Structure formats: C-alpha cells, structure tokens
Image (cartoon, rainbow, N blue to C red; front, side):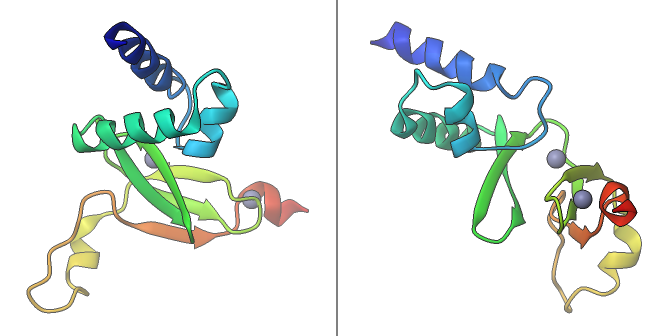
Length: 119
Ligand SMILES: [Zn+2]
Ligand SMILES: [Zn+2]
C-alpha cells in the first residue's frame, strides 16, 4: 500500500512538469488510472507540505501549480488562458487598507489576450 501511495504521488507531481496550472479534474484526465479521491487527497497533502500552491484565477475553480516559483497571474476572460506575470509590489502596497499586508503571488489581473483581441 505504501509503495502504491509513493507511486501515485510521483505520477501526480510528474503531470505538472511542463504544465503551468492544473485543476484536480485536469489531473484526473491525464491520469485516468488514479481515482479522483486519491488525487484530491495527494494534492491537499502537497499544498500542506508546500510543494504545490492553490491559484484561484477563475471564480469557483481552484487550480494548483508548483509552489517553488511564486508569481502573479494574468487571465484572459475570453479563452481562460493563464500567463505568469510579475507585478511590482511597491505601487500596490500603497493602495492597501491601513495595516494590511500583501500575500506573495496573490495578484490576478483579468483582461483579454493577444490572440483573442485579433479575432
Ligand atoms: Zn484569450
Ligand atoms: Zn502560475
């Protein structure tokens, strides 16, 4: 049993290679041999362990990405493409409520990507 758990863990992490963000549903599509409840359990574990982190780029959708490289996100509201961006903290910090601190990698900018503007 332990051996199978380790194997599942490795398979789940491996699907993130070369990908940016993935939802549990997307992981399950890529790994049909693993049950969704197992995927959920392992992903939650990875978040607790700081291997993956949650990114909430669309309402009601939780996606995950590697936690090692913290960055912000740009989301195209037309095709839902997600890009990595790096927001300058300085100007935003000045606009925060008094005494509030900003979470790293917590900024999501919505808009329209180049491809969608072309159409
Ligand atoms: Zn787009
Ligand atoms: Zn990202």
